[in-house]
Amino acid sequence: MDEQSALTQVRTALIAALEARRGLVAFSRLEAVEMDQHARTVERGALDQIRGLLPDAPADPQLQQVQTRLGRMEDALQGLAARTNIQERSRALERDDITWRAFEDIAWLLGMR
Image (cartoon, rainbow, N blue to C red; front, side, top):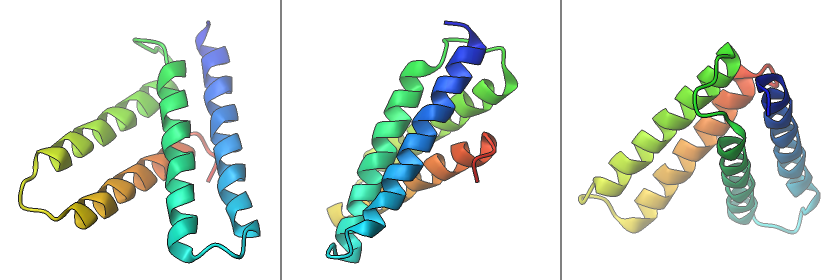
């Protein structure tokens, strides 16, 4: 797959995730916490899909930035997993925050925000 095709597929995955996340608002019966949990699930799925679409060593600057941002997210998640002085609920909240920020940053990098 060429890099232009990969970039198009990454953008398509992001658009689908953004639309799915917006669609959660339609479920007004959901509590805010449930809606947030569903949004993080959508974001994690999109980030996993994007990771699989990226070439090993992209030459395209946008794909490089996406790859770098995913790497920083993984580093932050590994650092969080290594921490022992944190309660599980706090760990889950921080993991969600790391995921959300990475998703938003990638959307911004690709001009979708």
